[in-house]
Length: 324
Ligand code: CP3
Image (cartoon, rainbow, N blue to C red; front, side, top):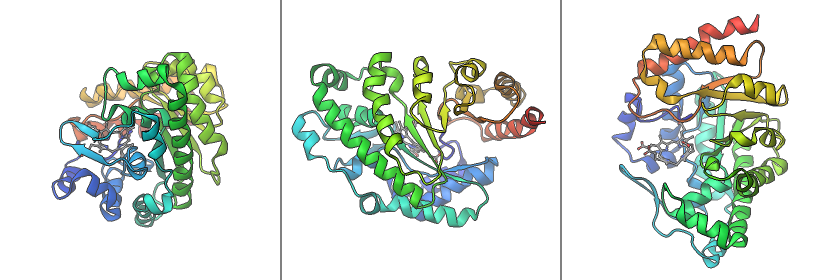
């Protein structure tokens, strides 16, 4: 969950020389900051430095990253005509820089750890494309969803195709696994979640030529639908910190691996307390494999690096007891 980023002085040093999108679009810089957390934190996998919003950018919406405001699309998608004007990009062309960043990173990692690729879910991408930026009330997409569901379906359908092609290209470029981030799935009611988010994730996963690469789904806040998510055909499900991992394991059994789920805010506490929380999560999951330890969402920019290191160290020291 956002390994690279502002909490790392080494990241900020690169960021001082280039803006965020330049970093994302320059394979050498993207590879450099992708590998930083592997060296600094000793994590067991790297996640490619990029952003979910490069897909709408390649579809023809110009993405801006505005300091202290986040991502902005100056011309949001509001009408049927706006949706029809979006193109489904050939990722080998329109998103070439991501594939180059992946192959450059693979080369530099030289097999040290696997490399994870990712994309946003159609629903989560649509929220940014329709709202034009991050949102609290989701007013425009709620209106579109209820007043013009056919228009939203058309947008989500285009996005599902674009995301599937994009993930396939990432796997071909060397991604060892891919994760679908559905950050805003939990905004929806359970019925609307299945209809407007999960069905399109299913469309991606069921058609994906994955060439053996595992697929991870993270629908933040959609804990009402974990069994439905497990039926989509992914290999792992990532969960936020509001569920008890023992309950999730009971519910899902060995059908899928489970990733999670430390509350990212707990990284503000002392390394001793972080270790205590790590142990409690490991005990919740219990003995055996099928658990990928992770945060329940992204790391905050002002978390002390020493605490992130303490987290990784604690997981490495405490987890072998569950694999005897
Ligand atoms: O290197 C890695 O660990 C990969 C990191 C990664 C980024 N974005 C880098 C980033 C990942 C996995 C993403 C995905 C992403 N982007 C999501 C889904 C996951 C999530 O966090 O819920 C979403 C919703 C976005 C959209 C996005 N990008 C937002 C809302 C923001 C602003 C966040 C903020 O705190 O200002 C971004 C910018 C962004 N993406 C940063 C990073 C490191 C911060 C950029 C900077 O100023 O340096």
